[in-house]
Image (tube, rainbow, N blue to C red; front, side, top):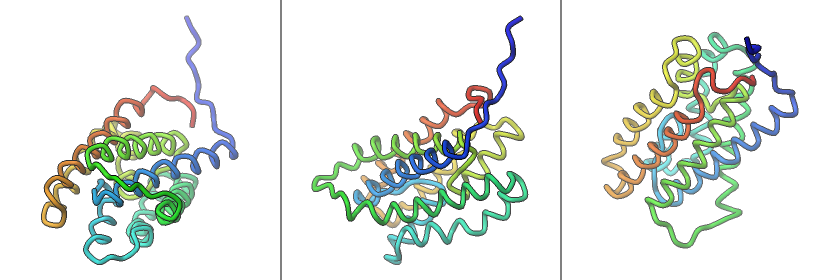
Length: 203
């Protein structure tokens, strides 16, 4: 009988590079969504709602919204996961504020941004998930339910994300809302297809 493969732990430097890469990709997608006036799901979506309604900094709101979820992460997922998640949320908050100062797209097509930005965020989430990190909020709940009960993280997040995006109906233009729904689908399809229990063994 063939040997059963075992999980291969990531080294500290691998985790650091992965968290940097994952948060860079997610924050770039967030910056593109912000410039196009789109929404996304999760705590980032809630941060967008507050940002558009109050003009407060997205990065600051995103960081503050996630604070209550760290207790749950510590209790259910362990201190390493919680620390990595805290660092990831902080980096996305910082990077999402820096990107607009470094790059600016003069022409924005909402549906194109939804596909590209959603893909960037989806790949970024996968990188973080595979190094035992998340971006707080719904990510923590989705990963916990997948690890403990086998509920696919991508499916759960897709349902919740689309619900949050639809809640933006009274704030954004209908075209922007439809593009935001497309972005949520693209993001979570990437997670569903590439982050399944048993498919990836490194931790």
